[in-house]
Image (cartoon, rainbow, N blue to C red; front, side, top):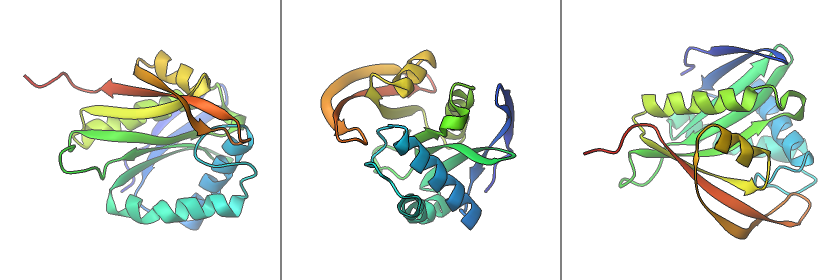
Length: 188
């Protein structure tokens, strides 16, 4: 399913955000380029430097079945030059957690950073989560960092920081902050 796309105007130009139900070759290439760029730029998103584009493409190919099955909602931001950002909602969680989703791989290409694309992707992910019946979202981010600042600015609640939780792409250790966001009030 491709939901009705959202268009936003940023300092970068007009950006369209839409959900993908299937990933075609152009999607895989564009997503791989964004992931490789983010890792090259130092983002702690699960990969080490150098990340060849073909390895990044393998990662996205591996998720294609989960996206097609609806276990992951994949949102893509693109402009006339191609894909410049993405975020995922992990929906396929254990049966005792049907009310929540995890946010994963919120990525924005360096060519589109600080233009509002990241915030727009997060708002779109929240909209999809509500449509999927989810009332709480969870994510983590390297701290300190741009992503952490974005989530705080958008009103996400920090739970705590785990020191030395992961590695940065260059091999250095980084702390990680865990966040949550309620989308609906607590049930009575």
